[in-house]
Image 1 (cartoon, rainbow, N blue to C red):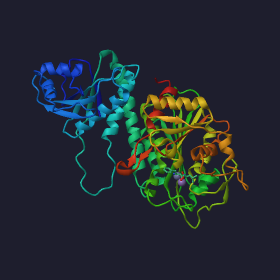
Image 2: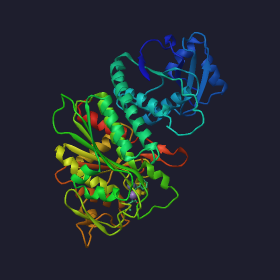
Image 3: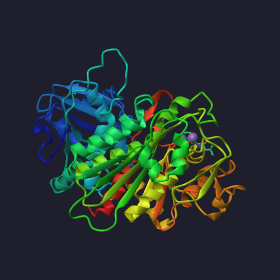
Image 4: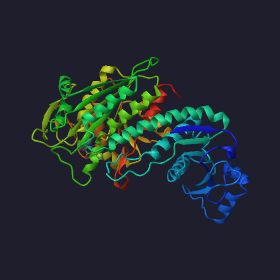
Length: 499
Ligand code: BES
Ligand code: MN
Ligand code: ZN
């Protein structure tokens, strides 16, 4: 996909299709009016007749207008006129509407001459980033394993933003960031959408090794069972022991000659299938537990983005990958195991396996003497009850870090909500037989899960993202969403001082 800007007269733009906005009272935007005057008011006659309502997100394709160089004009409904200009949410909606309308035709190049939010609501570089991100997300097709012939892919290969000359350079910078983000998010989605029998821990390991071949800045190390044993990751080993599929612990390092300071370490939960183990899950939506490696997929996708942009920052991605299966050798409720850090854990529920693999990964992170550690995991059903599918849950032992992440989520339109962790929750994990249990009661389930992880983060500035509600969708639109890739990139760009 190619991205470009156009700062000259709209009617002169050599393109397959140009998209302009229309309010729901039929009023044309200034850009639409310019074109209307060139084509003897064919556009305003059309809206006056009432054929096109201008309802938010609706589109109407007009072809072969005299006086306009573009072959087609796409009218995009803006809905009611807002007093303070268009909001970011509405803008994202109309950009997606224009791109998806174009993909339903044979249009190869599309120009967006749509109204934009004020610069203080959406800066020029973020505008560029969002256009590239939304294009990537809209064109994404599930890598399905259907045997029927694949439908023809969309013809669209070029998106042009009509812009003021002074915005040009920043929009172009944003295009690069957004394209790299879209590539990383697509990699995440491809991995997460794959079934558990294809996307195994070894498959994740191979994918990571593949990244190191593509990007010079990346170094990848994949630990197998013997190395994981040598690391004494007793909690991780406990989860994998019920599975025939060998585990993998993946280390991906991005280095840059200009990067100074301690690294940012990203940690991902990579349960390639979560049956619950002996504490077996209910059947109805168990298939969705193939998405239980979404955190790992996001780490791998984000490392790809970081490498593609060659960000001047040291970033380490860690992935603990295994299956959670019931088996003759599987862990049983009541089993006690020893984590790499030395703390003992009584496993009261084998379905609370994410925190077991993460605690050993967090301990591994300490050797990098990181600036910050951020783990991401489809950790609890309770976060879906608390926040639904709209916000990622952010937990941290450092409030300012949590606030920074929430802020990045707002800036990147990939929202998160600050949730509590503290001793009160940690105390609920008391065990009569070990240093702690792996579950507390039903109350505050996401907070006690985070409090479990917090016990392994002494000396670290750490945040935990519970993405069980945001990383994938169930139901008719079942599939990975790519979240929270956008929030993470925003965070890393800020840390890299790149914006
Ligand atoms: N992977 C699940 C969490 C999950 C549930 C993600 C639903 C997405 C949708 C995790 O391993 C799990 O099973 N958690 C348990 C914890 C409980 C046993 C304390 C849960 O949330 O039920
Ligand atoms: Mn589980
Ligand atoms: Zn799980």
